[in-house]
Structures are given as structure tokens and as C-alpha cells.
Image 1 (cartoon, rainbow, N blue to C red):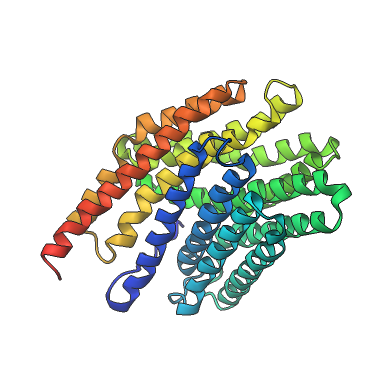
Image 2 (image 1 turned 90 degrees about the vertical axis):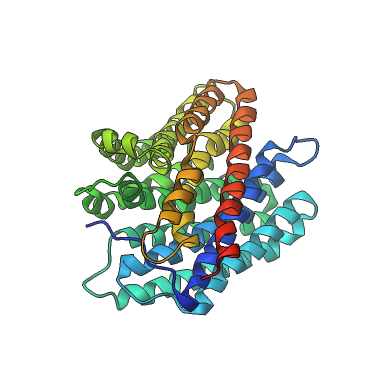
Length: 392
């Protein structure tokens, strides 16, 4: 069974949709930092603007949004929506500290850990009281938050043990990218893609139930390999490729409805392909075909860009036009999903070029993301016009 998206609209419950839209637009604007030259913003600071300031609050907001159908429970209480805002403050402070004052990480990391603990505790309470059992997708979110806590602990430890800075930083990076972002994204794609593509995927529930352990163990092995125990790197790749290949096979089997649906579905399918490319890039780095410095530009271009463009193309209409299906919601979805195919092809092509040593390809990928940001802002402005002139 694929859980359906919760209703966020109607009266006072419209507020969650506005909050989620704010988080989505904040993430999109943060993604523009990818195109800022290194002479103006250090690569590490640029990455923290994208990941900590933009993606972390959005992913926590999405977790809150999807936990309701995964646990078949009531809408979240108002205080829960403060958690992504706490993460936003922590992410902003993290970006500032990396750019200007490293001491700020001693405040930013604990704040982000507090947000993760609050969200994990709330999820656990919902899981205990779930009607008819918990959907296995929730386990991916819980695992992602645990990896986030571990990754933040690693960077805090690096401040106290500077002689171990390099391995602890590698742990921080891999636990966050593959653990927090990877588990959240792949766990969500298992059900979001069939919803966006308007097709049933009878095997999604079983994949979520069986494959989370491979993703979790693969993340741990890859993180240990990156931290210096290189023998674990190949094991991490093999373990993570199990859920990726199984999800990829499902995408291939349903390629006809995905292509017919277009828009968000194509971008989300592209994100699955992009995640596979990102996993294979680890081998290319070992073989010295690809520079380690290109790993984050590759992660952004081939995976995050199609993931976020696809997810927001599908979710923003639900958040901005809550309640029953309407012509206005369909029109907004069409506007957001326009040019999804060429844009996703650009992201994937640019990512593959980065993987084979063509670092310049990050620029057209960033340009494609910038165009989507403009397209989204224009689509929302057009969507708001009727409601201003003809209030409900």
C-alpha cells in the first residue's frame, strides 16, 4: 500500500502548507549558492548554505508532512512545525561559522542535534500510537535522523581532537550525505514517485521493509571507508546499490506511466539514476578518474537538483492549493513541471561529465537550477493572482 499525502488545507490547517512552502522556497534560493564563484564564497561555506541552510530544514519539514500518513495519525501539533525553523537557524549559523568564524559550529551543531532529537522523539511517539501498525517508510526517516546526529557528533569531536580533523570530517560528510540525505530521499522516492507518476507499485512496501538495513549498513561502511578504513568502501558501495538497483528496476518497469505523466515524475526518476551515478563515482575517485573535490558538485548536480525540482514540482501545488483536487492545482503543477525532461537531462549529463573529470559541467547544471528557481517564483506569483482578485 502506498500512503497518500496528508491534507494540509482548510481553515487553520492551511498554515502547515504555508510553512512548507516557505521551507521549499528557502531551499531553492539557498541552492543558488552553487553558482557563486569560489573567490566570493569558499566551497565549504557554499556547501553549508545549500545543505545546512536549505536542505536540512526542508527535509525535516517533509518528514513531518509524511509522518502523518505513515503512522495514520492526526495532523502534527503546532509546536512540531517549530523544529524545521530551529534547523533553519542552526543551518544559517553553520554556514556563517564555516565562512567567517569556525567557533560558531559549537553552537550550530548542538542546535541541529536538538532539532533532530525533538523530531525523532515526536516520530517515535506517533509510531507507538499508530493505527494498524507503522508504514516501513518511517524507519528510513528515523534512521536518517540517527545518522544526522552521528554526523554532527563527528564534526563536534573534530573541534576537540584537531589532529583527527580529516577522518572526522569525512565521517561527518558521509554520514550526512549518504545517511541523512540518502535515507530520507530514497525512502521518500519509493512512494512519492509512484504518486507523482500516477501508477501503483505493489512492491514499494516490501522494498522499504527489507532494504533499509542495506542502506544503513552501506552508509556506515562507506563512512568508515572514507575516514581511512578503505577496506569498507567497496562493501559500502555494494550494500547501498542493493536498494538503489531494486528501486531502479521498479522505475524501469514503470517507465511508460512515468514518461506519460511527465513533470515531477521525470525529475524524480532522474534523481534515482543520479543517486546511482553518485554511488559509482566513489569507484572513479579510487581509480583517480575523478577528483575528490568534484564529489560535492556531482552530488548537487546529478542527484539533489533533480530530486528537489521533482519533489517541489509535485508538492508545492498540494501545499499552496490544499483540499480537494482543483483546476488551479493542476495548472500550478503544469507550470512547475514544464521543461522537466530537458532540465533533468541537463542535470544528468552535467553530472556524468563531472564524474569523468569535466569540472566545468557544474556551471550549466547550476544554471538549470537557477532557471527552475525563476520558473517556480513566476508560477507561484501567477497562482496567487486569482486569489488576490477573487478572495474565497
